[in-house]
Image 1 (cartoon, protein in one colour):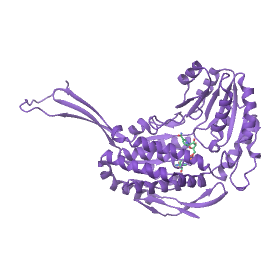
Image 2 (cartoon, rainbow, N blue to C red; image 1 turned 120 degrees about the vertical axis):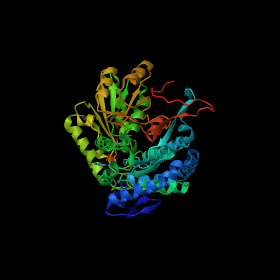
Image 3 (cartoon, rainbow, N blue to C red; image 1 turned 90 degrees about the vertical axis):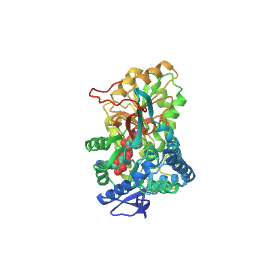
Image 4 (cartoon, helix red, strand yellow; image 1 turned 135 degrees about the vertical axis):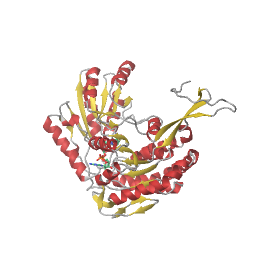
Length: 490
Ligand code: NAD
C-alpha cells in the first residue's frame, strides 16, 4: 500500500488517519492518503507566511526563471506522471499525457509574467502629478481541485498564482492525490523556495479549515456544483476572493447541414473520452430536424465499437461506477430509449476486476428527465430531438448549467446566431470540446461557475493580484507650496 503524504515546507509529511486510494484498472486499493486536520492546515499556513515576504519581493523575471525550469522538468517527467495519474484515476496514459500538455501550456503562459504584470502609467494627471497602477500579490491562495484532472487543474492555478508572487496551498482530490506530491517535488527541483507551495491532503474537514482561515486571501475551486456553491458562499462570507467552477451538462447541437461524419466522430470522442469524466464532455446531442434519424443510425455502431481499455479506461471508484449505472437504470425508467447499454460491455481480459462501464447511448431524451438535467460524469450520451435551431437554443439556455456548448453546421449564419445567443461560457463551432488556450480564460456561466473571474489567462492574473494605484507628486525645485482645502483636481 503506497502511503501518500502531505507536502509542507519542502518535504513530505505523513499523517493519519488515512483514506484508501484505488487502482481502478485492478479494482483494488493501492494507496493510502493522509487526511489533514487543523494542525496540518496551521502548519501549511505558517510555512506560507514565513516564505511569503521574500517570494513576493523576488523580481518577476526571477520568478519566471523558476517557471521555465519547472516547465522543462514537467515535460521531462510527464510520461512518468501520466502513468501515475492513469493508475489512480483510470484514464488512458495517452489521455493523461495530453492533459499534462494542457497544463504545461499554462506554465508557458505564466513564464511571460514580467510582461503580464506590467502596470499602467499616466504622466501629468495634474500639474507635477503622475499616477500609476501596480499589480501586487494577494497573499496565501488556496486551490481545491477535483479528481478528474489531478495534475492539469492544479496547473491551471499554481503557475499563475506563484508567478504573481503569491504562496499557494493545494488541496487535491483524495481520490487521486499522488500527482500533486510529484508536482511539488518538481517545483522544488526547479528552485521554488520551500514553503511557497504546500500540499495538504484530505477531505471536507481540511477544506473547511482552509476556507475559514483568517490568513487565507483567495480560494480557487474546481469541482461539483453543490460544493462550488458552498465554497463561494462560505469563502466570500469570510472575506476571501473566490472563483469556484462547478459541474456541467454540455450540449452539442447538430444541424441538418452538418458534416455528419465529423459530427458523429466528435460526439463519440467528446462523450466517451476519459469515460465521460470531463467537465467539458458532451453529454447531450441535440439533433435538429431531419438529421436525428441519420445521426442515431450512424452513432449506434460507433458507440458499440468503443473499446474498454483502448478508447477509454475504467471509472474512478466502485461507488462512482455504481452511481453512473444507476443513472442508466433511471433513464430507462424515465422512458428514454436505451440504444447501447454499457452495463453489458465485457471488461478487457487483462483487467477483469476494474471499475468498467461501457459506452452508453440513449435516444428520445427529454427535458424533464434526470438523465437530461443532472451531471452523470460517466460514459453516457443522450440524444434529444428538436425541430429547429431556436428550440435547441431555448433548451440549452434553460439548462441550469452553462459550461461548454457546441454547434455543428456548415452554415455561418446558424453558427453566428448560436454563438451570439447561447448562454454558456465556452462555445465550440464544429469543435466539441472548446477548452480555451491559456491566454484566454476558462470558465462557464450559470451553475457552472460562481465568482466573476475565470481560471488562467488575463482573468487569472487579475484574480491572483490586487491593484494598487499610486498618485505621486515631485514638485520641481523652487515651486510654490500651497495648502489645499478643496477636492484636488487638475
Ligand atoms: P467534488 O466536488 O466531489 O470534489 C472537488 C474537491 O472538493 C475535492 O478536492 C474534494 O475533496 C472537495 N470536496 C468534496 N466534497 C466537499 C465538501 N462537502 N466540502 C468541502 N470540500 C469538498 O468533485 P469531483 O467529484 O472530485 O470532480 C468532478 C466534478 O468536478 C464534476 O462535477 C465536474 O464537472 C467538476 N469539474 C468542473 C470543472 C470546470 O472547469 N468547471 C473542471 C473539472 C471538473
